[in-house]
Length: 295
Image (cartoon, rainbow, N blue to C red; front, top):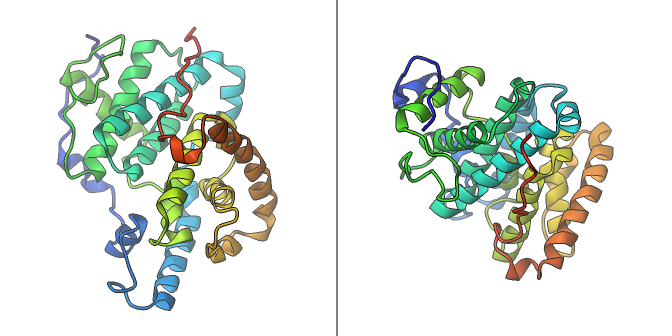
């Protein structure tokens, strides 16, 4: 078992008091649980969705990895492999415990922000495993009602296991590095404001698969979360009668980025379909499992 050379501090719920939670309206819409019966007519819903979408556009820059992160990933095989392995671990752990998709994407956001601030570290396998467990644990503590134990968050195929105290120390380290900002805006945050709550199962599945693939592709880091979300929605809704009004709220000077990102995601959609079609694939079954070597 590995230990961190820092003072042991327990990570309890009091640690999260300095991180603001979204307003009730934002929480309701971001989880896609609203309906015309509960929240007034469709026009009122549209106004709420637009307000939330514009708020997310304004704040997304505060929850992005540091500038130069993509370049570091391109030049460092070690960092790139560490990120891939950690993302795969986050996806599989979240899938196994059935946590909300928003929890998964928040954990992924914590990972990229932390790695971008520690890009010069020579990442070893045990460090990657510990960091991925920590990111999922923090996301679960912040967003989930039923929180998996630190023991349950560790996968059987891990090369290392960690004592709860070690994970708790790492939690505090990540919290400090992220400046305690766990209530973050990420790619999944934009889904409900853009599409609303009434989405079909097949559309949700296709969109989820695309967004999961986007997490594993480091090239997606060069795009804002709103751009990736908009592009994924464009790909997933081709031929679907979906209201795309919110796409028009993307600044005109960023539409070229949307088009570039859409083309990149189309290659991922092709890969998903090659695996047997969206309807036959679970979000995890199409995720690449072959790890690059950590040097």
